[in-house]
Length: 180
View: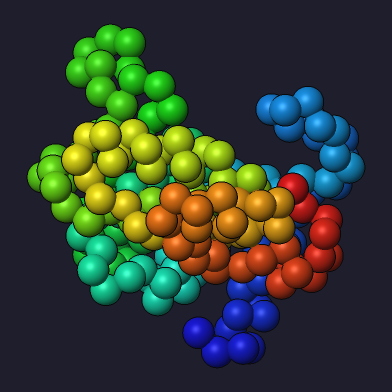
């Protein structure tokens, strides 16, 4: 991706997904702005552009792309279409009915998995999903995201053998620091 293309994509992401207003995070922290990843998924042209740009971040040894509910699911579907790699879907908790699975996808057993999520902050969610996949016998050494915030996620994941590959960092957005 060229610098011009990266700049244009960052501007589109910032315009589409950086929202001002009072937002409460799951840990109770209240922010005055928020990165609304659902606005990315709702814009088919932006989602397509993100998938094309993220395809360059997929490691060569990747065999399966695994999206984390809910924000990572549309991204992994688009990225799967852009790369031709199969997709898997991860639930935070196992389904309580039907298949009762936490990991969805066929033919993924024993294959090298790359995690896909929208925003990485502390890295806790990606680490939890890494552990679930590893317990299931699926190797994970890489994770992709649209936006990395400098809140310790890269360090935490690195301590557990997972390299983080963000498409954008908070500083890349036109209103740097205006998103969570």
